[in-house]
Image (cartoon, rainbow, N blue to C red; front, side):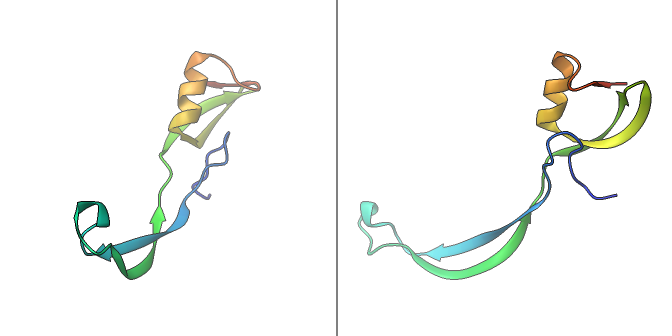
Length: 81
């Protein structure tokens, strides 16, 4: 089972981590220089929750945004168990 939100489809994202040195021009320096770029993983805010879908209880990953939506009421026949 992959870590992906059951409702919104949110999952981990690969992004660049940029390392810089120097002083910004606005603060009197010559500008910031990039000294390294490495890849890193930006993790989705996922939680394992029980939901009821069409009367069947399932244990799935849900994003924080999906949890807030479900707290307001049922969403596409899905509700928190």
